[in-house]
Length: 294
Image (cartoon, rainbow, N blue to C red):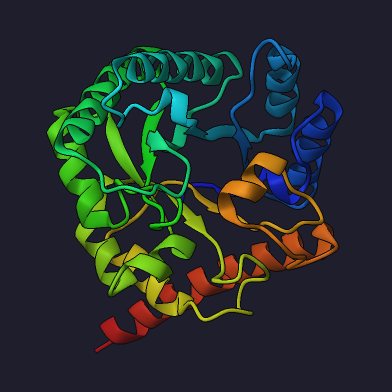
Protein backbone atom coordinates (compact mmCIF):
# COMPACT_ATOMS: atom_id res chain seq x y z
CA UNK A 1 0.00 0.00 0.00
CA UNK A 2 1.35 3.38 -1.05
CA UNK A 3 -1.11 5.80 0.55
CA UNK A 4 -4.33 5.23 2.46
CA UNK A 5 -7.17 7.51 1.42
CA UNK A 6 -10.86 8.24 1.87
CA UNK A 7 -13.71 9.19 -0.44
CA UNK A 8 -14.87 12.79 -0.07
CA UNK A 9 -18.52 11.65 0.13
CA UNK A 10 -17.79 10.51 3.67
CA UNK A 11 -17.47 14.22 4.45
CA UNK A 12 -19.57 16.14 1.95
CA UNK A 13 -22.04 15.87 -0.90
CA UNK A 14 -19.54 17.89 -2.91
CA UNK A 15 -21.82 20.72 -3.96
CA UNK A 16 -19.84 23.68 -2.61
CA UNK A 17 -16.25 24.94 -2.47
CA UNK A 18 -16.53 25.15 1.31
CA UNK A 19 -17.64 21.52 1.51
CA UNK A 20 -14.71 20.33 -0.57
CA UNK A 21 -12.24 22.31 1.53
CA UNK A 22 -13.78 20.88 4.70
CA UNK A 23 -13.37 17.39 3.24
CA UNK A 24 -9.67 18.03 2.59
CA UNK A 25 -9.12 19.30 6.11
CA UNK A 26 -11.04 16.39 7.66
CA UNK A 27 -9.07 13.90 5.57
CA UNK A 28 -5.77 15.28 6.85
CA UNK A 29 -7.08 15.55 10.41
CA UNK A 30 -7.81 11.81 10.45
CA UNK A 31 -4.40 10.90 9.06
CA UNK A 32 -5.44 9.90 5.54
CA UNK A 33 -2.94 10.86 2.86
CA UNK A 34 -5.15 10.92 -0.23
CA UNK A 35 -8.72 11.97 -1.00
CA UNK A 36 -11.04 10.90 -3.77
CA UNK A 37 -13.29 13.56 -5.25
CA UNK A 38 -16.10 13.15 -7.72
CA UNK A 39 -15.52 15.03 -10.99
CA UNK A 40 -14.88 18.70 -10.18
CA UNK A 41 -16.14 20.99 -12.91
CA UNK A 42 -13.66 23.84 -13.48
CA UNK A 43 -16.49 26.31 -14.07
CA UNK A 44 -18.04 25.50 -10.66
CA UNK A 45 -15.06 25.22 -8.32
CA UNK A 46 -11.78 27.03 -7.68
CA UNK A 47 -9.43 24.17 -8.55
CA UNK A 48 -6.28 26.19 -7.93
CA UNK A 49 -7.38 26.95 -4.38
CA UNK A 50 -8.17 23.28 -3.73
CA UNK A 51 -4.82 22.23 -5.19
CA UNK A 52 -2.92 24.61 -2.92
CA UNK A 53 -4.84 23.48 0.16
CA UNK A 54 -4.21 19.80 -0.65
CA UNK A 55 -0.51 20.47 -1.16
CA UNK A 56 -0.27 22.31 2.16
CA UNK A 57 -1.90 19.33 3.91
CA UNK A 58 0.21 16.72 2.06
CA UNK A 59 -2.99 15.12 0.78
CA UNK A 60 -2.98 13.79 -2.77
CA UNK A 61 -6.08 13.99 -4.97
CA UNK A 62 -7.72 11.37 -7.14
CA UNK A 63 -10.94 11.88 -9.08
CA UNK A 64 -13.64 9.38 -10.09
CA UNK A 65 -16.72 9.80 -12.24
CA UNK A 66 -19.33 8.07 -14.34
CA UNK A 67 -20.77 9.07 -17.69
CA UNK A 68 -24.37 9.99 -18.44
CA UNK A 69 -26.35 8.18 -21.14
CA UNK A 70 -26.02 11.10 -23.54
CA UNK A 71 -22.23 10.81 -23.19
CA UNK A 72 -22.02 7.01 -23.13
CA UNK A 73 -18.88 5.95 -25.02
CA UNK A 74 -20.23 2.37 -25.17
CA UNK A 75 -23.23 3.58 -27.16
CA UNK A 76 -23.75 2.94 -30.88
CA UNK A 77 -24.79 6.60 -31.20
CA UNK A 78 -21.78 8.46 -32.61
CA UNK A 79 -22.88 11.78 -31.11
CA UNK A 80 -23.02 10.27 -27.60
CA UNK A 81 -19.61 8.66 -28.07
CA UNK A 82 -18.12 11.91 -29.31
CA UNK A 83 -19.59 13.86 -26.38
CA UNK A 84 -18.30 11.22 -23.96
CA UNK A 85 -14.78 11.37 -25.36
CA UNK A 86 -14.77 15.14 -24.93
CA UNK A 87 -16.04 14.80 -21.36
CA UNK A 88 -13.28 12.32 -20.53
CA UNK A 89 -10.58 14.54 -22.05
CA UNK A 90 -11.92 17.52 -20.10
CA UNK A 91 -11.95 15.45 -16.91
CA UNK A 92 -8.31 14.43 -17.38
CA UNK A 93 -7.32 18.07 -17.75
CA UNK A 94 -9.33 19.03 -14.66
CA UNK A 95 -7.48 16.35 -12.66
CA UNK A 96 -4.19 17.73 -13.96
CA UNK A 97 -5.17 21.29 -13.08
CA UNK A 98 -6.08 20.38 -9.51
CA UNK A 99 -2.73 18.64 -9.08
CA UNK A 100 -4.39 15.23 -9.01
CA UNK A 101 -2.73 11.97 -10.00
CA UNK A 102 -5.53 9.71 -11.23
CA UNK A 103 -8.89 9.60 -12.99
CA UNK A 104 -11.01 6.55 -12.30
CA UNK A 105 -14.56 5.31 -12.10
CA UNK A 106 -17.02 4.17 -14.76
CA UNK A 107 -15.29 5.88 -17.65
CA UNK A 108 -16.14 3.25 -20.27
CA UNK A 109 -19.98 3.41 -20.16
CA UNK A 110 -22.84 5.27 -18.58
CA UNK A 111 -23.23 4.88 -14.82
CA UNK A 112 -26.71 3.38 -14.83
CA UNK A 113 -28.76 0.20 -14.69
CA UNK A 114 -29.02 -0.74 -18.35
CA UNK A 115 -32.08 -2.45 -19.78
CA UNK A 116 -30.18 -4.09 -22.63
CA UNK A 117 -27.18 -6.29 -23.34
CA UNK A 118 -23.93 -4.60 -24.43
CA UNK A 119 -23.18 -4.83 -28.15
CA UNK A 120 -19.96 -5.61 -29.98
CA UNK A 121 -20.06 -2.21 -31.66
CA UNK A 122 -20.61 -0.51 -28.31
CA UNK A 123 -17.70 -2.44 -26.77
CA UNK A 124 -15.44 -1.45 -29.64
CA UNK A 125 -16.52 2.19 -29.39
CA UNK A 126 -15.70 2.16 -25.69
CA UNK A 127 -12.30 0.53 -26.21
CA UNK A 128 -11.39 3.17 -28.81
CA UNK A 129 -12.59 6.01 -26.57
CA UNK A 130 -10.58 4.79 -23.59
CA UNK A 131 -7.49 4.27 -25.77
CA UNK A 132 -7.75 7.89 -26.92
CA UNK A 133 -8.34 9.11 -23.36
CA UNK A 134 -5.33 7.12 -22.16
CA UNK A 135 -3.07 9.10 -24.48
CA UNK A 136 -4.50 12.39 -23.16
CA UNK A 137 -3.95 11.10 -19.61
CA UNK A 138 -0.40 9.96 -20.36
CA UNK A 139 0.51 13.40 -21.67
CA UNK A 140 -1.09 15.01 -18.59
CA UNK A 141 0.76 12.62 -16.23
CA UNK A 142 -2.57 11.36 -14.88
CA UNK A 143 -3.19 7.65 -14.23
CA UNK A 144 -6.27 6.22 -15.94
CA UNK A 145 -8.04 3.48 -13.95
CA UNK A 146 -11.29 1.78 -14.93
CA UNK A 147 -13.59 0.80 -12.09
CA UNK A 148 -15.11 -2.64 -12.41
CA UNK A 149 -18.61 -2.40 -10.90
CA UNK A 150 -21.68 -4.54 -10.37
CA UNK A 151 -24.38 -5.39 -12.90
CA UNK A 152 -26.76 -2.74 -11.57
CA UNK A 153 -24.37 0.11 -12.40
CA UNK A 154 -23.03 -0.91 -15.84
CA UNK A 155 -23.51 -3.70 -18.36
CA UNK A 156 -19.94 -3.66 -19.67
CA UNK A 157 -17.30 -4.43 -17.02
CA UNK A 158 -18.58 -6.43 -14.03
CA UNK A 159 -15.57 -8.68 -13.33
CA UNK A 160 -11.80 -8.34 -13.24
CA UNK A 161 -11.53 -10.82 -16.13
CA UNK A 162 -13.73 -8.61 -18.30
CA UNK A 163 -11.66 -5.61 -17.27
CA UNK A 164 -8.42 -7.34 -18.24
CA UNK A 165 -9.82 -8.23 -21.66
CA UNK A 166 -10.95 -4.64 -22.16
CA UNK A 167 -7.67 -2.95 -21.23
CA UNK A 168 -5.72 -5.43 -23.35
CA UNK A 169 -7.81 -4.41 -26.35
CA UNK A 170 -7.01 -0.72 -25.79
CA UNK A 171 -3.38 -1.52 -26.53
CA UNK A 172 -2.36 1.09 -23.96
CA UNK A 173 0.01 0.45 -21.07
CA UNK A 174 -1.45 3.54 -19.39
CA UNK A 175 -4.81 1.91 -18.58
CA UNK A 176 -5.22 -0.12 -15.39
CA UNK A 177 -8.08 -1.53 -13.36
CA UNK A 178 -9.79 0.02 -10.38
CA UNK A 179 -11.15 -2.81 -8.20
CA UNK A 180 -13.63 -2.38 -5.35
CA UNK A 181 -14.48 -4.93 -2.65
CA UNK A 182 -18.15 -3.88 -2.57
CA UNK A 183 -18.62 -4.66 -6.26
CA UNK A 184 -16.39 -7.74 -6.19
CA UNK A 185 -18.51 -9.19 -3.40
CA UNK A 186 -21.49 -9.09 -5.77
CA UNK A 187 -19.89 -10.24 -9.02
CA UNK A 188 -16.75 -12.31 -8.43
CA UNK A 189 -16.93 -16.02 -7.64
CA UNK A 190 -13.76 -15.54 -5.59
CA UNK A 191 -12.70 -11.91 -4.97
CA UNK A 192 -9.23 -12.86 -3.71
CA UNK A 193 -8.63 -14.96 -6.81
CA UNK A 194 -9.79 -12.05 -8.96
CA UNK A 195 -7.21 -9.82 -7.30
CA UNK A 196 -4.48 -12.35 -8.02
CA UNK A 197 -5.70 -12.68 -11.61
CA UNK A 198 -5.53 -8.92 -12.17
CA UNK A 199 -2.12 -8.64 -10.49
CA UNK A 200 -0.05 -5.67 -11.57
CA UNK A 201 -2.88 -4.41 -13.79
CA UNK A 202 -4.60 -3.09 -10.65
CA UNK A 203 -3.94 0.64 -10.47
CA UNK A 204 -6.32 1.64 -7.69
CA UNK A 205 -8.24 -0.18 -4.97
CA UNK A 206 -11.41 0.61 -3.02
CA UNK A 207 -12.14 -0.91 0.37
CA UNK A 208 -15.86 -0.86 1.09
CA UNK A 209 -18.19 -3.08 3.09
CA UNK A 210 -21.04 -5.14 1.61
CA UNK A 211 -23.63 -2.80 3.18
CA UNK A 212 -21.66 0.40 2.37
CA UNK A 213 -21.25 1.08 6.10
CA UNK A 214 -18.70 0.31 8.82
CA UNK A 215 -15.94 -2.10 7.81
CA UNK A 216 -16.47 -5.41 9.56
CA UNK A 217 -20.25 -4.97 9.85
CA UNK A 218 -20.94 -6.80 6.59
CA UNK A 219 -20.02 -10.13 5.03
CA UNK A 220 -16.75 -9.41 3.17
CA UNK A 221 -13.75 -11.46 4.31
CA UNK A 222 -11.09 -8.76 4.40
CA UNK A 223 -8.43 -11.19 5.65
CA UNK A 224 -8.55 -12.92 2.25
CA UNK A 225 -8.57 -9.55 0.45
CA UNK A 226 -5.41 -8.32 2.17
CA UNK A 227 -3.68 -11.67 1.78
CA UNK A 228 -4.29 -11.40 -1.97
CA UNK A 229 -3.06 -7.79 -2.13
CA UNK A 230 0.18 -8.89 -0.46
CA UNK A 231 0.46 -11.84 -2.83
CA UNK A 232 0.50 -9.51 -5.85
CA UNK A 233 2.79 -7.04 -4.04
CA UNK A 234 0.23 -4.25 -4.43
CA UNK A 235 1.96 -0.93 -3.79
CA UNK A 236 -0.56 1.61 -5.03
CA UNK A 237 -3.24 3.57 -3.19
CA UNK A 238 -6.07 2.06 -1.15
CA UNK A 239 -9.12 4.24 -0.54
CA UNK A 240 -11.98 3.71 1.91
CA UNK A 241 -15.42 4.25 0.42
CA UNK A 242 -18.70 4.42 2.33
CA UNK A 243 -22.03 6.02 1.50
CA UNK A 244 -24.97 7.01 3.67
CA UNK A 245 -28.00 9.20 3.13
CA UNK A 246 -26.57 11.36 5.92
CA UNK A 247 -24.00 12.75 3.46
CA UNK A 248 -24.62 11.97 -0.17
CA UNK A 249 -24.74 13.50 -3.61
CA UNK A 250 -28.25 13.19 -5.06
CA UNK A 251 -27.05 11.83 -8.40
CA UNK A 252 -24.86 9.22 -6.74
CA UNK A 253 -27.68 8.27 -4.39
CA UNK A 254 -29.88 7.42 -7.36
CA UNK A 255 -27.15 5.64 -9.34
CA UNK A 256 -25.90 3.58 -6.39
CA UNK A 257 -29.26 3.06 -4.63
CA UNK A 258 -28.27 4.73 -1.36
CA UNK A 259 -31.67 4.70 0.35
CA UNK A 260 -30.84 4.58 4.07
CA UNK A 261 -28.43 5.67 6.77
CA UNK A 262 -25.60 3.17 7.13
CA UNK A 263 -24.06 5.64 9.58
CA UNK A 264 -24.90 9.07 10.98
CA UNK A 265 -21.59 10.48 12.25
CA UNK A 266 -18.67 10.53 9.81
CA UNK A 267 -15.85 11.21 12.28
CA UNK A 268 -16.02 7.86 14.13
CA UNK A 269 -16.64 6.10 10.80
CA UNK A 270 -13.44 7.54 9.29
CA UNK A 271 -11.39 6.85 12.42
CA UNK A 272 -12.62 3.26 12.59
CA UNK A 273 -11.95 2.62 8.89
CA UNK A 274 -8.34 3.80 9.15
CA UNK A 275 -7.69 1.59 12.20
CA UNK A 276 -9.43 -1.36 10.57
CA UNK A 277 -7.56 -1.19 7.27
CA UNK A 278 -4.19 -0.71 8.94
CA UNK A 279 -4.90 -3.60 11.34
CA UNK A 280 -5.97 -5.97 8.56
CA UNK A 281 -2.93 -5.02 6.51
CA UNK A 282 -0.57 -5.66 9.43
CA UNK A 283 -2.28 -8.93 10.28
CA UNK A 284 -1.85 -10.11 6.69
CA UNK A 285 1.85 -9.27 6.81
CA UNK A 286 2.20 -11.11 10.11
CA UNK A 287 0.50 -14.22 8.70
CA UNK A 288 2.86 -14.14 5.77
CA UNK A 289 5.89 -13.84 8.07
CA UNK A 290 4.61 -16.66 10.29
CA UNK A 291 4.09 -18.95 7.30
CA UNK A 292 7.62 -18.25 6.05
CA UNK A 293 9.25 -18.94 9.42
CA UNK A 294 11.11 -22.29 9.39
